[in-house]
Amino acid sequence: MVIEAALYNSADQLLASDTDNSGHFMITEDVTPGQYYLEIKGSALGSVNESNSRYNIHMGFE
Image (tube, rainbow, N blue to C red):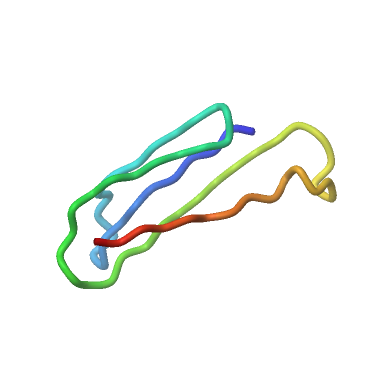
């Protein structure tokens, strides 16, 4: 599964991005308190109804 992720601030400025062909991504970015958007795009071979086309998001904050 190819997956792409991008982190934007409230002014729609790209802060960080990552792309991975094995279905994983990691974005590590120091940000100040505020509103941010995480955009995730993915594609996999096979039918869109297959369960392996699903993904989970794990987020950590410090």
